[in-house]
Image (tube, rainbow, N blue to C red; front, side, top):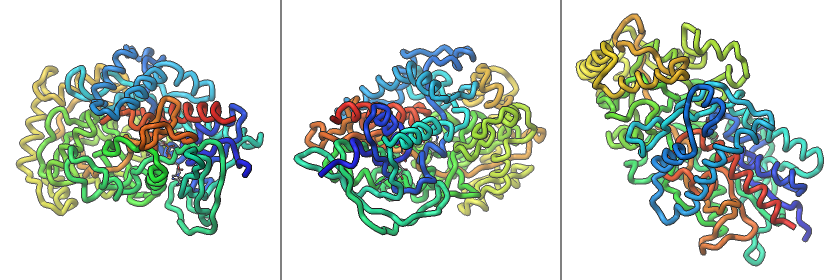
Length: 552
Ligand SMILES: Cc1cc2nc3c(=O)[nH]c(=O)nc-3n(C[C@H](O)[C@H](O)[C@H](O)COP(=O)(O)OP(=O)(O)OC[C@H]3O[C@@H](n4cnc5c(N)ncnc54)[C@H](O)[C@@H]3O)c2cc1C
């Protein structure tokens, strides 16, 4: 039987698009299959904030940040904590990825028209020693145009390849099985789903109208992770993070269903590090949801006071923006799956950003005028103000008495005591009087404001939380929000997938989140952030180039 294409790509997200365009650029024929409709092209990356991890970039240097491959490697090692035999390929991918992030990544993207917002963000700051988790320096480079700006060059290249007859899309094609002849993967089969007019990101129907079978010399699995499937998240939940949360909200659309991971594993592929995942603890329910249980992650600046459900301040160094999984582990140890930020209007105005392209119309719409208002505006950005007004997790009051009463009413648990919160907040407020302090969170504020990017748009001038001049007071109930799958299919540096017997499965490649962003988990246990989109770019590129070179 004649092949339908040289290469088949399963998934039209970022990793799939990058892989497919590389195949087409090499002059080979490629089919991209996606279970969703055409309106969903780009997958999760469209919704993303577009933050990219770069090392020693011109943007960093212009802000006086001294970064290097050595420093990034040290930070990566401290965060990843590689400690398993299965970490052989993840380690190799991490090394290769850091070299990419310090080298070709920026210029490769730039040549395709990608641009970066000049203020570099400082995500996952850690708070342990120099060899511990976290970024020693700001490295989070936000794409001008956020998520849509990340996918734009690849959608454009795919459409050009489509016009040349090298690439074709098959939307509403759900792959249910891999085809194999004599141990070589050579096709896919599955169900054709009924057409959908669901808007991008919305859940679509799974009604089957037909079947398909397609053949090619190579198949690249780029089907994303499991974050939209809470049952799978709970099944794979590691005991080191405590019990799986009873209640979670979703930071990803429903198509991130993990189904294709099971299909690929059933065909014999080796899935490793399935217990490693990256979920956030600063999730708020979207008052204007697009997908089921839609949650938005607050990208917090460093000043909000953080209390667990019982009203105890989180211990040092678990301050906003420091150590996502450390916070998750702590919160799960309290027996409640939520926590609280308490802050002021001055803090929310300067420090709250919401992760997601639709929550940042200024950056997504590439409007300098609107973006500059971040530094000059009296209020918070409009999407943050909208959450403050309509969000189910937000409480705004003038006095601490009223705030605590409203927090108790919101949770329904009645765990918070006014005097307990007041004592802790007043103690922290006393630490504002001097520039040298004992309270490590306040120490961090002084440290952060030495970085011009933070002083400009990310860290409020230190002030007393209970100073009415900075009010009103705001409390935000924070939920656990599912997002990224750090484990995945074990791959070599050409993105070729290993089988359960430990040998490469001929014809099979994996990229993006399905491959743990490379190797089956290049992050190890923790991430430095901005490394997911980058992992899709790098592993998708490697998969596309290698598959194109391998097919005759
Ligand atoms: C709100 C948000 C903000 C984010 N911000 C950032 C950020 O700032 N920086 C960063 O680095 N990362 C960020 N991320 C993470 C990043 O966007 C994702 O990890 C990345 O886009 C995953 O891409 P992917 O191509 O691997 O998978 P996906 O985007 O999930 O694409 C997979 C595609 O495969 C299709 N598919 C799945 N199964 C099948 C099947 N059986 N048959 C056919 N098709 C199938 C799906 O429909 C989907 O279209 C963010 C994510 C979100 C949701």
